View 1 (cartoon, rainbow, N blue to C red):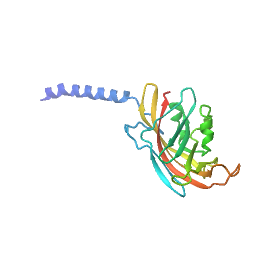
View 2: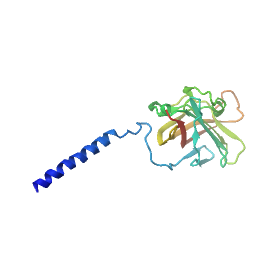
View 3: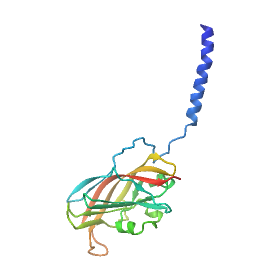
Length: 212
């Protein structure tokens, strides 16, 4: 019996040692704020609410690729079912998207500023957010977000940036956030209009950024 134990014990020790070495050498997942996520079918959406109506838009088929050769890119799309338009700036590469300082509040802006400056957006515009929404469901008259630099009252708040998958040249992330912003009618009534409505909502958007 003792002889059998002496034969088995060294083998057990060898197996345990190999397991410890393997565990120590495993590559670590990315640190907060982005976490590796094996969920390949996350709930992707945009929802909004103003005084006259509200809606949730399915974004499960959307993937927003970062522009090559630019420091910053745009989430930019139109929902045909609601006639709404959404735009948000984000870093084009994973090392910048991944920074902990991105979590938190960012500015609400006039959406045309972001779309008109696509390809030339400064880093200070990252995660700024804007949208167009009809005054009521089916209305041809639009409201749009207006510049709001006070992020205590109005904001685009990034809650999380989650790694969905890694590729050879690009990583895919899901950006989740919530927002609150002043809305004004178009055309503008003045150069500094008072809000005609307030929009609130949240979103989860998939972006494909350059791997750095």
